[in-house]
Structures are given as structure tokens and as C-alpha cells.
Amino acid sequence: MFQCPFRYVHSHKTNSLIGLAYHMINFRLLKHLYLFSVVAQERHFRRAAARLGMSQPPLTEQIQVLEAALRVKLFERSSKGVQLTPEGTAILPAVQKLVLHMERLEVAVQEAISGKGRVVTIGAITSAMASLLPTLIAQVKVAMPDVKLAVIEIDSAEALTALGDGTIDIAFARMEGETGAAISTRPLLTEQLGVALPPWHALARQPVVSMRDLADEEFIMFPRRVSPSFFDGIVSACHSHGFTPRILHETRSVASQIALVGCSQGVALVPLGLQNIGGDTVVVRPLREEVSLVTIAVAWSNRVPDPMIEQIVGIATSTDVKSVAL
Image 1 (cartoon, rainbow, N blue to C red):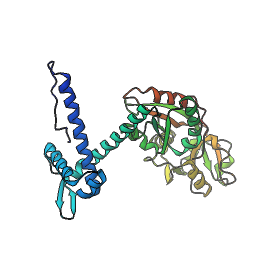
Image 2: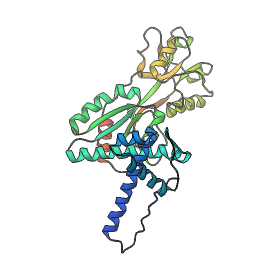
Image 3: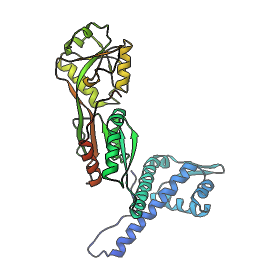
Image 4: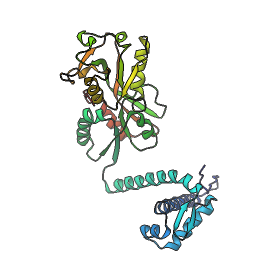
């Protein structure tokens, strides 16, 4: 396990100068780790030095200082360049992540000093991007004009990890239940489910379909690796009515589910609000039983109080969200 090679022992006699020196030593270590990451990318000291705008000897010397401090050899050197040692390979991912966070910190500090707004990164599933984010972004621009929102697409299964490692600040995904003490969630859209059927199907002639009527059907579902809570919710609903769903196809979107139902590839449990989405090739019938799931929730890290994130969450929870087939 990587540990900082410099230790600071606090005592009542410690003065501010020693504390300042301690922090300076840590910054020096961060610089050395950054230099290591560049050499690891370039696989060549001369190219790395040129990229860093410095001569090669000081770069080589500082890498040697880092190796001595860590008590490991990081590179194997040859006339053709350098290769990472097993130890260098082992610590590189953690160093790259550290460098990324330091770069983000530098940007945040520069923006704070210059008065420019903070960048808040939102991770969202496709349906949230279509149904919620356009309105949310417009409202945030009015209420928080100095804030910049960057949006990336995620699967629901990626949300907790991305929040935990700081890749995103807020997630909009299908999730409910236990998320861990460090993550807060609020449901934004909970929908009653119906069953999507090909129009020729015998059950399509019924105004209401019972869950038990679906026991022998082949299902089209989200894979669990994409949307764990949605998958588990549907499987649990089937189990509570005496059967395990036979999954024929797995898709990453409700639109794909609807399309496959239209191709007579099975049935799907989808939000009942999509009754008119299938045209002539799909019908969506209500279920006799109450089967509802959270289709969009907002989640954020609560490890450090962040009034800006909480304000955006507040705007999101007051936004009217409509179901979309994505």
C-alpha cells in the first residue's frame, strides 16, 4: 500500500513554521508524483522533459529522489526509453487519479480567485437527460448564474462508484433502497408499471393483465449490471406472484424494450405512462396489481456538506419530471 514517506509528529511545542514545512514537503511529493505520471505516459525521459518544459537531468534526479523516498524502483531504463517496473505499474492508477483531482482542484481555485463559476459534473441515465435535465439546467442558470453544469451519460450501476470517487457530483439514475451512509438519495419519479405486448398476443385483448398471467412469458429486461434496482424490483415483483421471469433479451433502454416487443421477441414491464409509445406494433396494458418502481432518483455524496449541491438537488426535487421511453 502506498504511504506518504514523510511523517509529521504533532506536539504542543510544534510551531507554525514546522507545520508550514510539513505542508511544503507534501507539495513537493505531489510534484514528484506528477513528474512520475508524465514519464510513465511518455515512456521516455527526454520526451517527458520536453513536455514538462525542463531539461532531462533534473527530471531524472527528481524521479530518483521519489524512488528513494518510496524505497521502490519505478522504471527500468534502457537506450530505447523506460518501462515501468511491477511496482511502478501498481501505483500508476492511483497516481493518475491523484493528478486528475489535483488538476481539478487547480481549476477550482483559479475559478474561485477569478470569480468564475464552479463546474458541477452531473452523471445521468439517458431517460433523465431527456426528461429532467433540460428543465433543470435552465432553472439552475437562472437561480445560480455562476455555476456551470457538465453532463456525462452513465448507467445506473455506475452512479454510486462515480459519486464515491468524485468523478461526478450529482447522479440522476434508477436507484432505491440501500446506497450506503455516504450517499444521499431522493426519488424524483416513481411510476406504476404496465406490460408491453405485441397486439396479436392473447393478453393484449384484456383491459387489465394479472402478474400471474405472465408466468409463462419470455421477458425483455434491463441487465442487472446496468440498472440493479430496476432489475431487482421486477424480479421481486415476479417472485411475489409465484414465478421467476424467463429473460430472453436484455436491453439498455425502454425504447429498445418497446422495439423488441414490437418484433414479437417477448413482453416487458415498462412505465404505464408510455401507453401510446408503441404505435400499431405494441400495446401497454395496466397490471391488476400495484407494481411501481423509482425510475429516476437524484443522488449525491454527503461526506462533506456542500450548499451548492444541495441547492441544485432542491431545484431538481421541485422540477416536474415526465416519463420518456429511453
